[in-house]
Image (cartoon, rainbow, N blue to C red; front, side, top):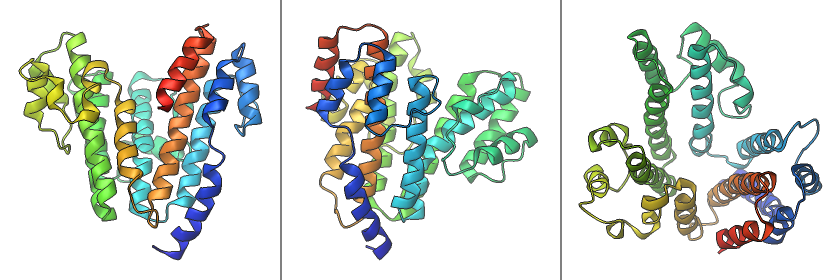
Amino acid sequence: MSSEQLFANGRIAVLSNKLLTPDKYLRLAESSSVAEAVRQLSEWGYDATNCDDCEQMLRRSLDATLSEVKELCTSQNALRFLLCKYDYHNAKALMKGKYMRLDFGDSCYANAFYPVSDMSRAFVDDDYSLFTKNMATACDAIDAEFADGRRSAQVIDRTLDKAYFADLRHFARLSASKLLVRLAEAQADAVNVSLVPRFKKAGMTSDRLREWLIEGGRIKHDAIVALFNGEISARELPEEYRQLAEDGDVEAALAVVRKQLLDYADPMTLQPALQYFYAKVAETESVRRIVADVKNGVDKEKIKEKINANAR
């Protein structure tokens, strides 16, 4: 491991001690209002300055995490792997803004790899040379689809999702990290399995399902389609994806896989940076769910039950 990553791992150990603990989640569940929840979070290190709502604060927190990981992950390809999701989130927002004549800039992450201002200019000019080959090809394909009259948000999402997973595989391979390669495979598998309950609920066909399946996972596409058609059961999937086949909760399934992989990875590598990054992202999502429950007046004991269940 490089001396830079060794130093970064020491800093990560300090930052990890600042992650919210289960008892703080339970205290957050006791909030009488969103305003009280925001006040508590600000006491625990969240930046609530000039925030109109909790969502704005959480986006700011996640953006700060993206900035941190740029300093904590010394492998450029591993960094691109982690930031890839947020570059593609921004690409989707800007592409939809381009064709819907709306400004989605506020929904973009400022600390993804590509500066938002540069991305915005690229979409205005139809010049995608700044981006990876996969993203640029996807953007050109979307422009062609819209020019031919196939104008829908689904075209944007499906085309950019496929490019996103291609870039994940690309950066994982370039990093020479077996851990990142396995994480990329797990993400593809989780998304593919999650499509089964979603497409069933929407009354879609198996042919339509095949169009949306992502390349690069370990579970074969034929097995996903067979699951959709009822030819095999979820019990024939790897254990971590069985519940996903019922509820479509991608993040819950990925949390299990990441725990399996990261808990046994070599701590003298970039593993601590990955572990901290995913833990901080998961914390943001947990806070978002709890505050949403508080806002919607969900019974406090039920909120706590969900918190305890997720902590197991």
